Length: 217
Picture 1 (cartoon, rainbow, N blue to C red):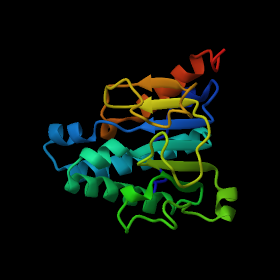
Picture 2: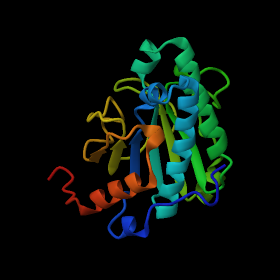
Picture 3: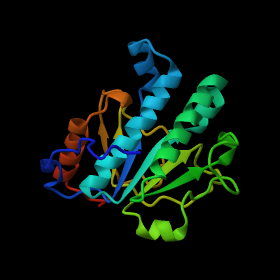
Picture 4: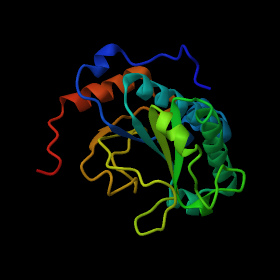
């Protein structure tokens, strides 16, 4: 569960408009494991804990929707089986922790074939809370799992994104919700995902607030 005293971004981060829908591409976990000389399993569990922390920051700032990249089709096709198991373990750890927080409504979106049986699901990917719980939640959190253009995906379809944050130094979307990202503002950082800080998050929000959003005009 999210620690009640987890640090939130500085108040100055919210002086301008906030994104109504924040997207996150949490890259750099394997490189973090190599740098720290630890296991990939530890890296993906750290990644899950960091995701829970960042969702907490977003909720405290008043951002009503957060969608994060859980695993891509390319990951499913190319990563070793043990690493896929670690990624799935991280997804499950996040789901278990996040669904225990009443303020959050957690959903999965994508292709259930990517997930082993022990990941929460019903008829493929499923909403992890009831509709009543969704109505009471103050922040909707979606994990994108094995989704790709042209593929039939299960779960509630995420709406348009306003801001996408990508860690790890790469400056591309890597197939992350291409339609929803069409007019999103893109903020990139070299910081590896497990190292992502409240100061980084605040910097991204300040940058977003300073943009003149034209939405294709």
